[in-house]
Amino acid sequence: MSETGWQVECHDCPTVAGWYGERVRVGRKFDGPDAKACAEAWSLLHQDEEPGHTTRISHYTTVTFTADAINPVAQRIIFGHE
Image 1 (tube, rainbow, N blue to C red):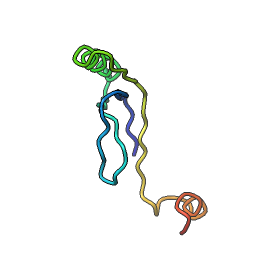
Image 2 (cartoon, rainbow, N blue to C red):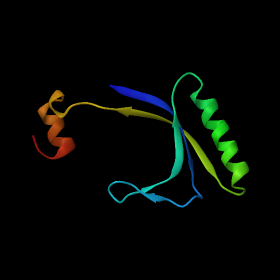
Image 3 (cartoon, rainbow, N blue to C red):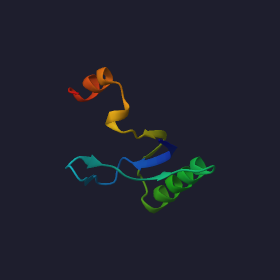
Image 4 (tube, one colour):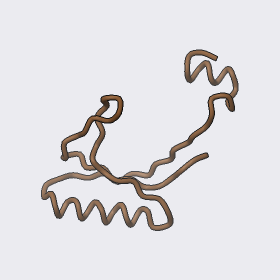
């Protein structure tokens, strides 16, 4: 299963700790036929609300699979074990 879309992130807003303590940038993800336009609109709105902030718009693809659905050799390379 895969998901694609556009995301926008602010590089000047304070980062927030995620579930595992990693740093996560403030932003939004959009999917669908008008996803890029929505990301661009969010970026402009955010820059209007927070003058001087820099945003980045990028395309993303997320792939989800079950570990038993991959070749054992590939599983060893990715996860370090079978």
